[in-house]
Image (cartoon, rainbow, N blue to C red; front, side, top):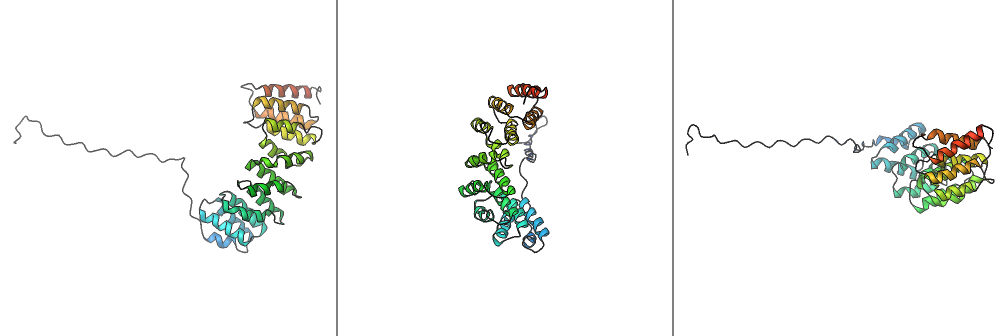
Length: 272
């Protein structure tokens, strides 16, 4: 049909607008950088410093090939100093197949390698790993016991509590941090009951670390303050003072108020 003057011209269909591009998700993890195979040769080479650097770089990589390279090198055998770095790197990307190799190194005669393996085992839920960590709390070397304590805390291995309490009574440096990390209200009460058997400084340090835990309930924290107030010496006063410095005055906490009273009394000469 002819179009006459005055007739409306046919309308052209609007072109669909392109969809808006979504901004990049900055929270998404960056893709793993490819693992440099040259590091494998360095890892197993005779230059210990270069091998340790290669082990550290492999540990920082999320590439599965890096993890496999570390596991293969540890299985083949590494210098103890290099092995300690490789073990720490391996545990950053823990896999179930790591455990048998780590158990071997956890019995190594070298203290550094043994401590590294025990510390790493805290990242594995395998019952064998937990059992070895608890056993390491009885190691003759301080460094290994401290590593075992850290592994107990990392893996929340409550089977280690009994041994840690025994170490507490000996004033062992391996005990305070993991006991404080594992403590609930009942365990905090049990720790406080070691007044008179554990050295005052070690007991005050342990209870003080519990006080500073943000997730520890304040009603139970009040009881911890009262337990510290019974401990004689400057270490107990310091534990309460550090707690007061670690929390804001507002909102008010009953535990803070009680701690302030104890510290004021002690500084005025009216306390222990």
